[in-house]
Length: 94
Image (tube, rainbow, N blue to C red; front, side, top):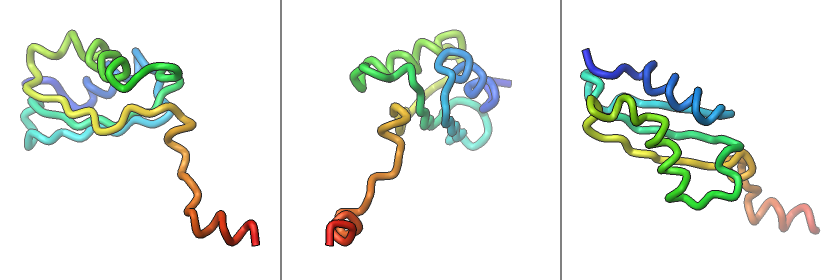
């Protein structure tokens, strides 16, 4: 069998010590295509392209068997925090 969801999770977790990680197998179960959402302190000070490279580097040992990886989110913990609604902020000021 190809790369499993658990393989992808383990590789990303080992490299990035994420505070949030969601890996979705979008291949229908054959392990050839994944979507990833990851939040990590290691992304601090890094541009989006650098963050994506970090995820791809973590997956390098598996990339020969993976057809596609879509990194949906690569955020710092601060960026992952819910932002207050503008209307809510206006109400607080009133």
